[in-house]
Length: 93
Image 1: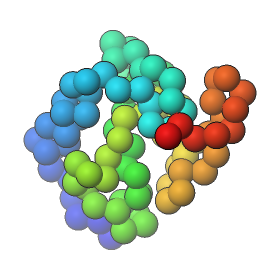
Image 2 (image 1 turned 135 degrees about the vertical axis):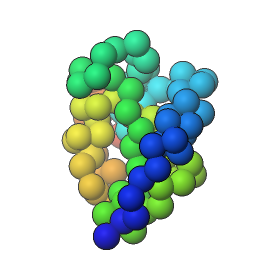
Image 3 (image 1 turned 45 degrees about the vertical axis):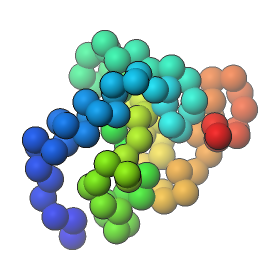
Image 4 (image 1 turned 90 degrees about the vertical axis):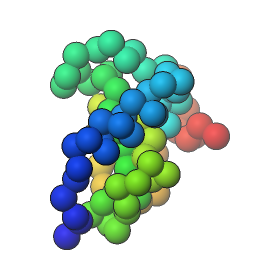
């Protein structure tokens, strides 16, 4: 079972990742960083290797994502195929 999360660390990591306003790491599309909580397009932090699969809660295991893309990825380690809005199944590089 993963260790409990520290909310101060979580908030600091969210701010660091959002600073450059990067696109979604899963679909490659821009993220609207002003969208409200629970909007499917809102900015969330995705664990590259999910915590329940042994991933750490460190900054190097986190990436920006849309809420909908993060939900589609679920707890897969490989990220799976996320359908890009362009219709491509390729993951961004």
